[in-house]
Amino acid sequence: MVAFHYVLDGHVQVRLGNGPVHTAGPSSLILVSRNDPHFLGTDVSLPPMDGRKFIRKAEEHELASVDHGSGSEVKNHFVCGFLATAVRQHPLLVALPPVLVADVRGQPSAEWAETSFRYAAREHANRRPGSQDILGRLSELLFIEAVREHIERLPADATGWLAALRDPSLARAMSGLHMRPAHPWTAEELAKEACLSRSAFAERFTSTVGLPPMSYLTRWRMLLAGQRLRESSDTIAQIAAGIGYESESTFSRAFTREMGVAPGAWRKSGGG
Image (cartoon, rainbow, N blue to C red; front, side, top):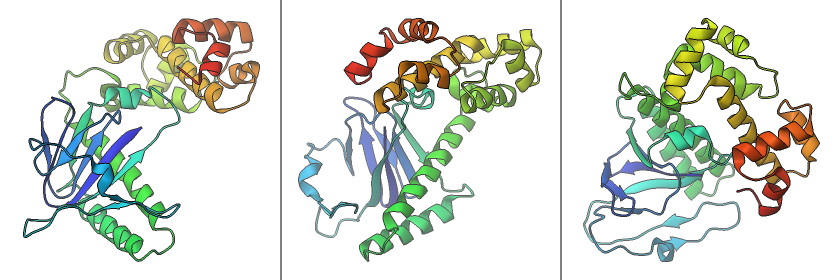
């Protein structure tokens, strides 16, 4: 789960534990990639206060609000929320820094994002139906913008999952195996997706991602299997078939090797 704060007006700071302070101004999106506990305020060097007591609870299916502070100080307005993924340890979230501040000013989406957030906030204040859905979709789009900006700022020699997405050849192969995990992929077929020779693809994929292509495919399949074990009532055989394993026993061995526990035990423990 990712915590996010979109700054409409003013300037805010965010800090994880004793880590560095990150400052965000108007039209900035703050992502706390692993939803770690964090400090947020105009000055995080001040003694912290428990924000929960300032939250005005809303009715079911409505957004809560916070109104704190008084006097002639400049007001800060920001929208907070969460973005969730069904897959725990999703490689995207693992690859992102713990805190990411993306200033979208100057980006093609900046004016649209600010106007849309203000519109949605006003709609919510007027209790019009659908305002929460609008804010949810806007949050998803801004998350994409923040990740894209981060990828574009990566050093030319960067490695890792995000660096692979910046490589058109590797991105094509990764898109294929992510969209069709049950397909009987081979190294040759993935290389064809990437429009590279098998040897060139294997070398580039491994040096960038840190895993050989087929090892990465196995890891992705097991993450998906873990999600289904946790959230569905499908049998282990059905889950195995859904990610490309004809044999339940072969799947169980692969799952145990990758996740450190057998599928049945994973399900009983609630996943991890």
